[in-house]
Length: 61
Image (cartoon, rainbow, N blue to C red):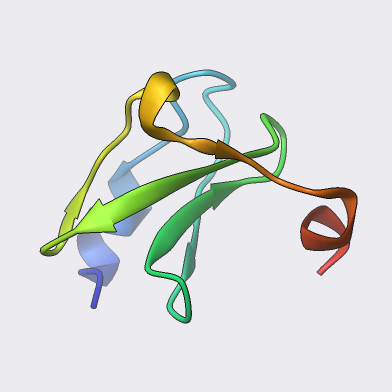
């Protein structure tokens, strides 16, 4: 579970845009950068090389 106060402060390190917490996959989504950053043990891993690229279907959700 992500702390909502922390989520308000975090931005995507690539696009500097907002991040959306995806609870089902425990990821932070950056639609503008088309990346999903993992959250491990409650800690967001905001490293581009650790992120996965989002598919077109995931962007549209």
